[in-house]
Length: 305
Image (cartoon, rainbow, N blue to C red; front, side, top):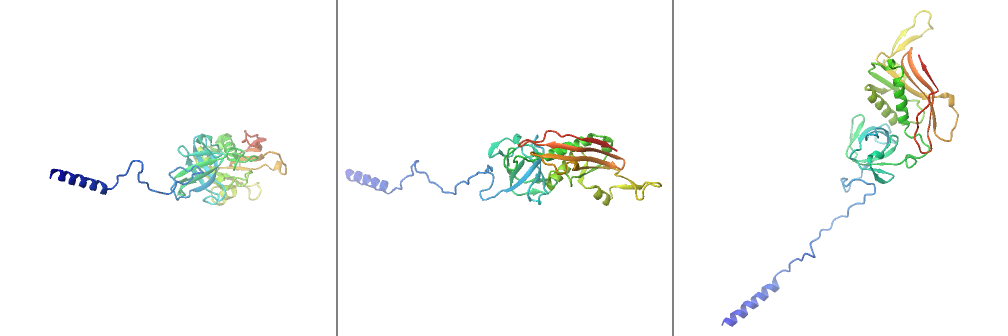
């Protein structure tokens, strides 16, 4: 009897073992298939959504490369038809130079750059971009910074305007407004670059700045006019801007028709406060190498009135 019971129990154990499901082994874990990670040829950070296409804005670095707080003017049509001006701090933004990862310190004033961002813009002035994924730049002589161009023309004009500000400082002392007339400035500045220059010049000197010609200031009531009285030609008047100063850059006509193998610029720069208060740099010149930026400029003559 005992033998029969032992045989029965042994048989029952064998049957239970055969019917039990097989345990998964460590060598064959369950796998979940998913879409492959997209390629990232443009260096866009992983935070870019899988199905998101970044907005790419091509701009000129007008100023601020030295400390990474860039003032940008859009090129081509951009977001505002070529008139957009933006502020962008690149401290924590991935930067590439000629397609290779680089530090923000490689950026230079005058460079053309591509800014990849999420398309959101804060409507301030300068405008501010939303989430920025990358900034791609080219060295001088490459890409949009091709050789034989007036690299950092905005920087040259800022230097000229600053130098003019320091001359006969009484003309711009205690002004609350300044106007810049860059409508005829040689060098083919874009409208965005002109607006960026106006903003930066005012920012540097702590005054409100806007773009205007002499005729526009007169039409809009900024200027006062007093007839000169007896003995003066008919219609002659003393004209002045009580609390402002007009700065302008125009071509130097003395060099019309001349041609040079490398980029060369001739221009005049003036500031005007009244009929008897003005200062000017005349017959100025600046030159560029094949892949270099400007290195100072020369003043042909100076005049005060």
